[in-house]
Amino acid sequence: MNKLYYIIILVLTNFSLSAQSIEKIEAVIGDEIILTSEIESQYLQYLSQGNASSNEIKCQIMEDLLFQKLLVNQAKFDSLVVSNDEVEDEVSKRLYYFESQLGSTQKVEEYFGKSKANIKIELSKVIKDQFMAQKMQSKLTSSIKVT
Image (cartoon, rainbow, N blue to C red):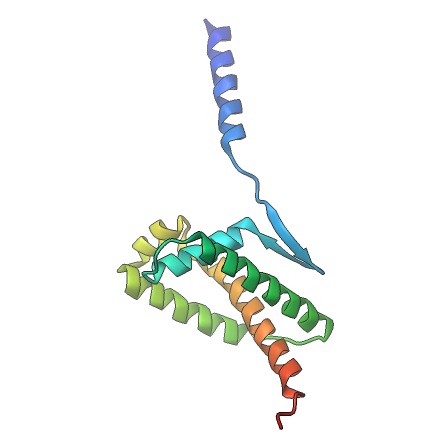
């Protein structure tokens, strides 16, 4: 009976382990990578703003992320920096926005399927990349003269 019990536990453990998904890399730009979770996270943010579900939006998110990662890669090459204070301020603003839209911190955690601390960590990376991309884009376009 004990052997049967151990075999059942082993089989169930294997099924459980095989059901877990591994993070997938969707694209690589220099040292920058785009993960499936980044696309899904931005898609969830899009949906949290009351927008309708759409596969076209996922394609647009991917295109935007590719362009952003290209700019971030160049920004790192050019040694552009973004302060932690700027990032933390923006993270706080976005979390407040999500909480006001969804009603509470608990609902935000349920919606994203993550704790507030994990949401902050992910948002910090996304926001830092966005700010670096904006600075790089600004640097590139500042030298363009309009006639």
